[in-house]
Amino acid sequence: MAPTQNKAVLSWIDEMAAKARPASIVWIDGSEAQLNALRRQAVDEGILIQLNQEKLPGCYLHRTDPHDVARVEDRTFICCRHKENAGPTNNWMNPQEMYDKLYALFDGTMEGRTMYVIPYSMGIVGSPFAKYGIELTDSIYVVLNMTIMTRVGRQVLDALGDSGDYIKGLHSYGTLDNENKYIAHFPEDNTIISINSNYGGNVLLGKKCFALRIASYLGQQEGWMAEHMLILGIENPQGEVRYLSAAFPSACGKTNLAMLIPPEGYRKAGWKVWCVGDDIAWLRVGPDGRLWAVNPEYGFFGVAPGTNAKSNFNALESTKKNTIFTNVAYNPADGTVWWDGLSKGDDIPETLIDWNGLEWHRGDEKKPAHPNSRFTAPAKNCPCLSPEFDNPQGVPISAIIFGGRRAKTAPLVYQSRSWEHGVFVGSTMASETTAAAAGAVGVVRRDPMAMLPFCGYHMADYWQHWLDMGKKIAHQPKIFNVNWFRLDDEGNFIWPGFGDNLRVLEWIMKRCFDEVDAQETPIGYEPNPEDINLEGLDVTVDTLKELLRVDPELWRQEVAGIKEFYAKFGDKLPEELKHQLSILEENLK
Ligand code: OXD
Ligand code: MN
Image (cartoon, rainbow, N blue to C red; front, side, top):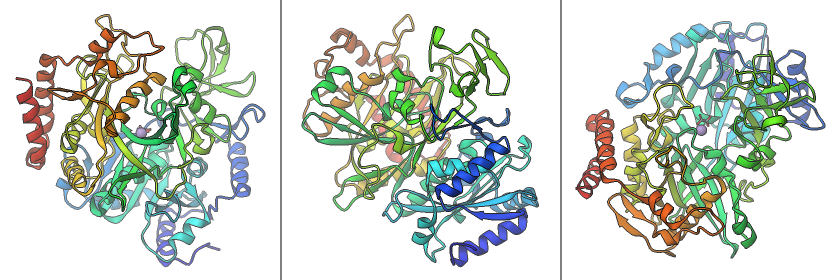
């Protein structure tokens, strides 16, 4: 029997079941007993491989179809009534046309399968930030991942009561037909439909689809913000904890920063870093006029390759129990997993089963784990998880940080002159492509606020929303930009990064609390080099000066690049951003 009387929910499920025609319907209650039974079934059906339960208790490995290994931006659509509301950076389709297409694909797609009903909450159930969703899916993999990534179960239905205010999510892995793969969002109907994929971001509908694309639209309507940001707390030796949120394009170390381990000197002095979230922040203005943030998720869906005890001890620890690994390599010698960068030299296992299920030998050219292989780990596993993780009010944000991977242009850190200037800085965020990615090296890719693939409406309206939000926040966070990736002329990284990034965060926090001065430059405020603590570090003040150098010629090229990018947005581009661009241009003369 359905565990709710909610008519809106029940009639929608009936309607969807009539289309997909599953053999049975199972409600997910979040209980261990039910999840255990599903894990057993998944192992029996070859969906999961159980790993060594002594070394990795509660851990499993899943291999996806080799053509279904990443988010598919070209198959991702925003379906709002008016095309112009989706903007130039989203794929658009008329909602009715998309519904017709999708419901045709759903016709009988679950025949002989079970349809699972997953009631879940993004945010702490009952908190002012929380929003509820129900995902219907025929994938056990989705069920088991959703119960790690979100808060699932009866309490969600109880909190929803009779209300129709929830996000409808319909998913079927269908036939995994790439030509008919769709990740479709209907922001005006609170609906997400996904078919023909069974990979993470395309199918765990609470994450990118709901908590960013749909939520960014809801945030605009309701006066809050859904951002692609980590949230962390920095505790100083006096025991004060100050919070920041930060947005970076992919491959810039967001999860690493979220779980940063302070350098030794800082640790000894009593500094601590607390992770509240590694990917998504929902931000609201609190009654005290500050901006408050929650992480709406309940787990981490992290990239495995490159994660090791040195690069991210806390992430690695998080994967030691109750974790689902996707597309990593399997070590048949001891029933554990491996990925590139996990160990080096002789510590690399001699023989592995690669992510395609084929035998792999140390020294083989092909990598044994897929470059986008992942771990789905409960946030509660993280050794530095913030004690405020479950606080329904969230945490007060003092600084917002943007960043990217720039070889020369952006300095190690600078502060915007105002909220409006900070919005400009976020809107022009960019990374240069590295040799690791396919295509040309050094090409500048703009990814405003790291939201390019995740903004559920017109990007220029989104910038206007940022500007409008600034007016509502009496005590605005200060906005900064960082670049951990400056290169010297030989192509070596100048800044050590990782835990040492705390040295920069310390300066940022001091700026937020008026505890340190800064220098004015054409692009914003920069630290006086002696104000960044270099103790215990092999970096001289001269090197720091180089890291902070602003090359006017490069910045004039940057202005030209921004103009070209802004031109895409035509008349919708907020006047304030044009004004900020003209100030930058003027300052560079
Ligand atoms: C992610 C992403 O998976 O941003 O978090 O692509
Ligand atoms: Mn992300």
